[in-house]
Length: 367
Image (cartoon, rainbow, N blue to C red; front, side):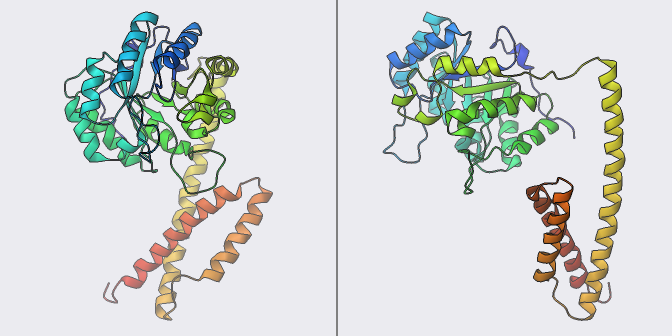
């Protein structure tokens, strides 16, 4: 699919001077006081940080929660920028935020998940940023809706924002999972497939919700080829006024980073190229066969639909499907295929078969 985003490459943003992956954005969830922010920044700077993050306006579910220090915190960021020679960034959600952030000389802005989920808010932000040359990162929407994420990016890009990237922070879910947010890596991968030149940062802090899970999620992001990480770091996480459980001390953050393995995006090694090409050719052949098999299966489903129509039988046969799925799972386990994968795959196939039969039943006899 054609890439219709006009982007400036990350290495021309002049944000990360050494350009060593993973590109790091770190700092506290919230700027709580000058002392807290400054002491955190000092320790992060010692480890080589170039871009400091801090929440100034915090979009909280309850107004009784800590909602940030607002423009007072921008003054702290300005002073720290000069004192420590750091780039600074924060989250913005409306025109007033943007105006204040630009006046304070921030170097990068990011759009939160609640905001990217709302096209009206995104258009207001795009209008406000018209003609402004500043890097902007957009977090994925709260729900697993790729079109919303794409729409947010397109609005900004059409307003002239060319230093544009995304932050994958996971998705809200009602399921009981080990993480705060559902990773759903495939959504970010699909976005990257459609727009190969868009930089992706992972936010393992918000995906995890617990500091002990951040390392594995960070490595997963690098394994998938993400360019950078945005990690919440606080000088004293246990006393943090927001998201205390998912913040790392600066020392813990750099210890974690030293354990990460950065995967190469490619190689000129002839053995690798030869073997990977052969394996990919095998996959292409198998995929073609899968398509042929699926075509045959849909033909049979339509034939079943014709018999059900002739004998006035309802489309959905719950007992038959339950027994079929149980057999599929039993056979799949013998082939080391996960139940989760098979349930997802065959539920999609089953729904497509139902739709095919429904098309047959809904056609008139003349057709």
